[in-house]
Image (cartoon, rainbow over all chains, first blue to last red; front, side, top):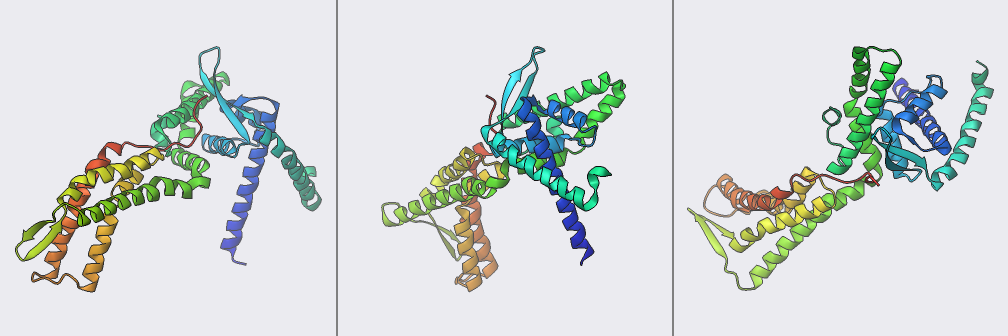
Length: 121
Length: 213
């Protein structure tokens, strides 16, 4: 097989996995409570012990995309310090979407575990 | 600084302001977090600036996130539709002029005779403005407004190209001269007139992200 194509496919697969996992992480977090961008990023980094880290260029486009797809909605709020922040929360569609996503990722990791023993590594 | 690094992401200025405000707020939080975490000021600033080194990628990703699905529809709404409305209006007026009262004004340059509808030329800024306005209203940026406003020229350019290719500039003067005259009076002059109508709309920008509640 052409190495270039293989590499390109691997990159695409990795990118899709990365994007999918980031989406499910955001949706799962917003299922608990409404959060603003920085807090989403901070909590994901903290809970994943630094394994998942967002940059501006990855977090906000993803939030706008989720909003466009109707999975999250946003509203601006001013905090006690007078700072405006855009809070994101899960919509009914987002809640509905999250359940099958969780199942899919669970199946994916179980399959990967059977294949490569990744969770025991 | 956020605005400068990110550039235009193809949304309305109000929506761009919201995005910039949101990103700036994120960077302020990041800066404070760095200081709280024991970083020095220089280190904190460097960390914040590090986020902005991906300004182009950020703008591209935001543009993609907000536009991708509707790209074709947007192009239709912001360019093709206003352009064809402008072109149709110009052609309808031309047809009306040919069949009704306005006389054909004739321009002579040596042996070359060019027919030019002065009323059509006078009305051209209105057609340019119509195309640009419709594009602007649909959220078209500068390029879309310009393209939609100047769209009636495509008919003239097409006609001149066909005439040139088929050798139908059958007049006494040499072909390049006829071609230049045709370009001047068939494209450049109407183009300038259309542009007059387009100019007020060239500061346009496009909406996409939901506005602040």
